[in-house]
Image (cartoon, rainbow, N blue to C red; front, side, top):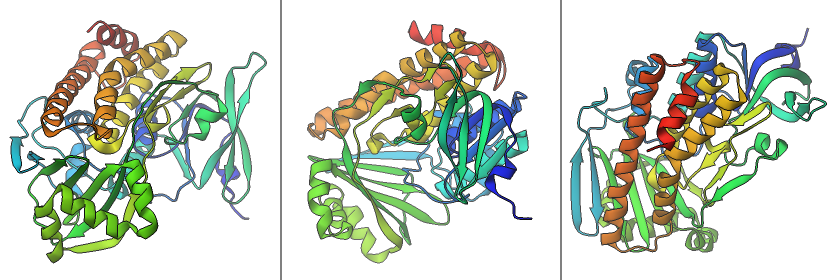
Length: 407
């Protein structure tokens, strides 16, 4: 008998999560740990790579530690990052990662490492994860409330699933968001273009971020002795240059932004091909509605220039999971309130940095402001423990939302 995607899926779940990357897998894990029956579907092959900055900020590392996953990440060989150096022209400002909030180092795992780790944790908690399957339709009841979905496998088979909530975690171009008609409530004005690659034989200690007028670059140590090196520039410039090839614009921008880094690459080796990302302006969509919710880039995307997307995803996975476990629309509204209060200032600072309409002194000021907002985010994560005493307490969303909104 041939096993089809549809035959793997049961007719009813408490929660259907569309997308098994870091936001979706983390949300599913937390819901399953709370005892919900969870189905996760993802159109991509399990363990496949995706565009990513890799870098986890303190809040993201704190989440993995609280969920009992940080030791597993360390065991993959992802190196500890204990410093970050900001380069403004010829000026270099090094900063140590100070041990606090239970975090003594940062990490930048490849997505081929982080996403499977979270998927494994979701499965261990009892969630069913099916790759090679995608959201085809949402199913609505007589009142218009989302009551489930139709899932379609790459083999063409279809399954109708009833679910108390359908969660879109399927990226910035989310099909779930389109099908539930989630409105955009805040839009960015700027987008940077990025070209990145992974290099071996490059000696880099800690994160390095480079800024010069009109360009930026970075070096991010990741697993297997590789370093992710990116070049960032205004989106129109990248689009104009891409017909000439990603390699040419990559080396041109690296030479402008970080000449010493560009020189070091001459003795390093590029693994696979360069990956261009032409950029899209950031946005914040409505995060919930009757029978549905959005998490990760599906609900909130900001430019990758500040390398904060994974940390956002893990934070919001916990906020949403708490609200879903609570089981009320008031809790889901509280999830959006908390998400927005924690995100708006980060969103605006990032959008300004992505404009490249700054001089180096303003860039320094923007990064100081960014650091203050990230410190507030870590405060929020500490508050989650205080409000419920655990990773998935059912009553936390409203209390956290009220506390954050009042800050």
